Length: 355
Ligand code: GGG
Image (cartoon, rainbow, N blue to C red; front, side, top):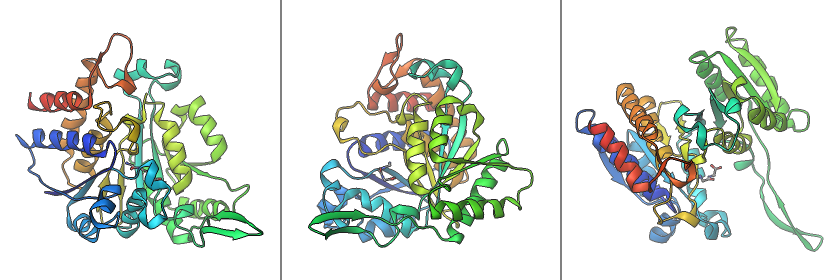
């Protein structure tokens, strides 16, 4: 199985190398992998003048799966879009048509004490945010910064086609059928035309899934309910920008955004697997980052793209044993636990896999 490793910027390389370490440990008595690394993001721009070098995009397209780290830095965010590291990720998602981004939010029982939220709120939280990834205000045209009446004006276009909404709605209903059969569609249909269409199309698609209970929430109310009664949610389907914001908020139910993996899939089954967190330049290179989101993304890759569900379960169990031993990176540290760095956390998971 051939894996394209696009580690990217900031903490991307250090967390991704722990996921590769875990996959190598699995290979000792399991599936075999070959890894090909390629630059992306600011690293791609520095090496080739393009944040998404053509050779990197082609490698991603022909590999069996893509393991991605993080892209972009605060400095490159100030450049024009074509020179921004973070834009490489958006272009790759669009180019590979990776429209369905599954972001599981699972409150590990071993980590309940690491959260700043009350035990009775987060215990048993197990939900999935399904974020549409190839449309919305991220890609809608026109967009730009122009000068009008002597001052600069920035604008974007929130846009979804009916077919884009329909395919992600189907993915949401199918995911709910595999779980607790509850789908909550999140929009802002009281204000936005894009959302009014979103809601109409989701209701139409619901007719194909009579065994799934469909509810709707405005995004503002959904934020409140996620913190107040997160156990009420099973699968949440929403657009690109709302999904980005909601999943970061939901991450705190697990203790840290460093615990949230993701799978971005297209209609042919190709997938890109990445931690939900970004490049966190402020902690890059300091051995402080939590590699578990990247390692859990590798488990999603095994399950969703590589047809290796048993290996995925082995990897997830190894993560849980390491947490049960009390090992914690700084973001999930709690009294009585043992603080470790990125590298030591990765070593501990690899050691568990070797047992
Ligand atoms: N590993 C995820 C990552 O690098 N995220 C950077 C980011 O914020 N990208 C834009 C987006 O996903 O909305």
